[in-house]
Image 1 (cartoon, rainbow, N blue to C red):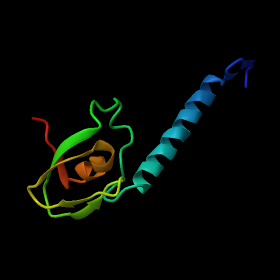
Image 2 (cartoon, helix red, strand yellow; image 1 turned 30 degrees about the vertical axis):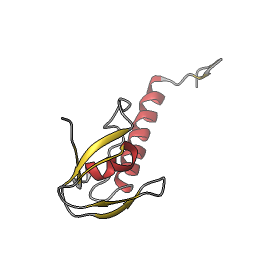
Image 3 (spheres, rainbow, N blue to C red; image 1 turned 180 degrees about the vertical axis):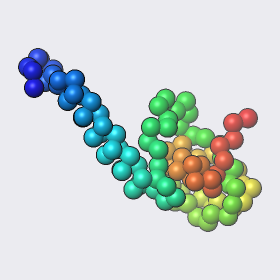
Length: 102
């Protein structure tokens, strides 16, 4: 290490590169481990959501989905719902729900 300034330590250029390589490996390993069917890409959505609720269409019979507030929603093929974004993003990525944009 070269020195210390008020907000942290400087790393030599090779230290920066090695830290970044290690971070990328750790992130990739974690993302592969947290979801079914090949993991979950945490770097995919870099912008905050515009709305807390999204309109979705169910693409297959899924069954009951219990929301954080205790409400139970029955997800049947071709039904449409207005759901909290945070609770349906994974189902959208898995292809169970489709985000309706128009």
